[in-house]
Image (tube, rainbow, N blue to C red; front, top):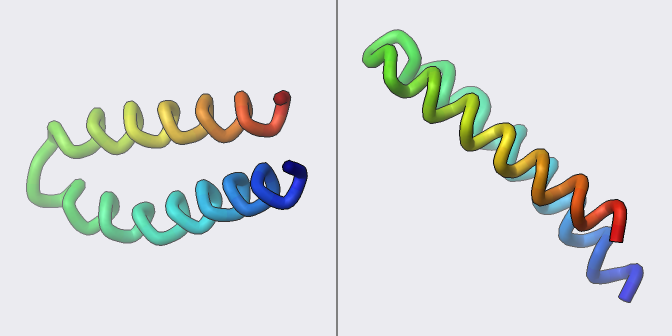
Length: 54
């Protein structure tokens, strides 16, 4: 069970690091992508912290 949780946390962190440059690239094209990136980041962070707490 701990292996699954550790893998999930590592996957979430990897997902954030992969998406960050993509969101920065889109930020110059549209202003709405900033808010989408912030909401996506907070959503992933909340899910990751919930996985970490359980």
